[in-house]
Amino acid sequence: MEQALQHFQLQLFPDGAELKDQRITGSLVRNAETLLIKYRVEGALGSLRWPVPVPLPSRCHGLWQSTCFEFFVSTRGEPGYWEVNCSPNGCWNVYRFNAYREEMVEEASAKTLCCSVSEDSNGLDLSCRLETSGMIEKSCTLEIGVSAVLQHRTDELQYWALCHPGLKADFHDRRSFTIKMVAVAD
Image 1 (cartoon, rainbow, N blue to C red):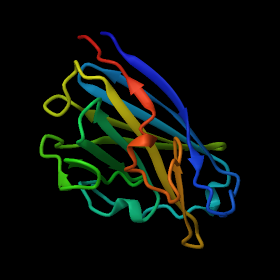
Image 2: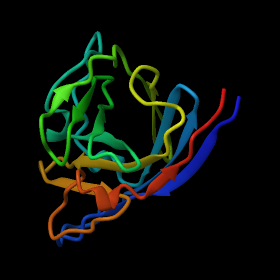
Image 3: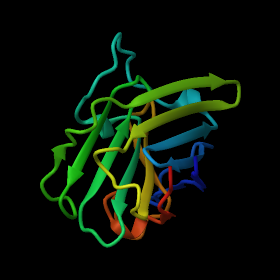
Image 4: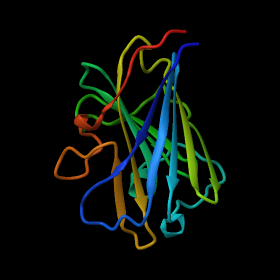
């Protein structure tokens, strides 16, 4: 099976916030019917506020209001896109937009999102697998934005993305969808 692979490193939004020695890197893999994203957070993990564990992770709203890992997927030339939210506690959601921040609805074809988290002495790994069949045509070239919100114990939120093209942190800004992933075959 053919697949495409891209590595990334996120940048902290330059709003004067202290860096606190964090670093976020990762990779994206696309095959015919799946997008797999892996995040690696390194640095002072003890300074972060992690979402409360839940017994049964489920689809939830407002995950971006605390520590959350996100990615945005669009098909080249189309105004619509999807927002995928993954919490370290396993909660998730997938939203579809018709255009920039317009008509946000839960993506009905996304029935589940497989997320896993592991931690070692150097950092935390979060993996998320999105089944794209019924949602994204495998023949389309994708434009992807990757981002994260880190909430510190002080409740300060930090915004991380591939790039920050505007005057404020805005993960929906299509100029930040800088990863291009070509169509893949079965």
